[in-house]
Length: 301
Image (tube, rainbow, N blue to C red; front, side, top):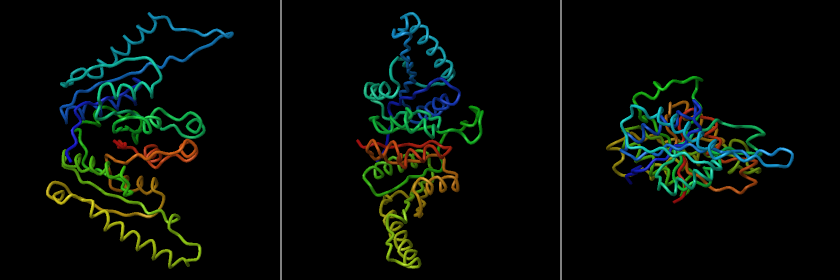
């Protein structure tokens, strides 16, 4: 299955780190010959004083839009590509979801600041909301290993080590399709990784040696199952690595990505109930917050 990103939507809040998503988007747009929409959403907070709401004047809003447009143009200056700026006001996550549909985007690219702790528990982040509501694959540019990373790090754009997290669900199956297509596009090595969670299979009546044998049998069976997911002709145009780890999925995927210097991770997104999302988060959320390479989450069609 050949994936073609004809229209890419990139969102930035115009901060230094968020603008790295723009650099990533420019590289993708050039690679695929895509139409690129660079979007900035001005989220105007409602301010009240003595019971009266403060409303921004129309000319103030227009000044903010003009300033944002100038900054976006500066980001794209000198880049030979087909692009268009989009500056709007409104709630960020819902506005981006709407724009994704209006622009018929095949891919949306954003950055995350990796919010954790109590703020995330009660507020969530724009990225985490998009993961569950956006209508196209979402690429998240994560915080770099070192602060102050310059644009030159993205010189020679491309992905050479691509990892796909496989849990044998329909969602991970779609992520696998995107993974093989991108591996062919960039002539990259593709890593198919499944994580067995020991606690999900353990039996309190089993002795420890027996439990270890059971996990070993499971990992062996999973490796064989992963091999069946590889297209027949894939070995002709890319190198395929198969791995089955045991432990917590987000920890093992993070460790594998670091050990193999993975520069793109693909994961399927599964829906969670509100309580699960608030208290536990998903594997995709946790991987995004723990790695320093882009993560492409593939949503159901």
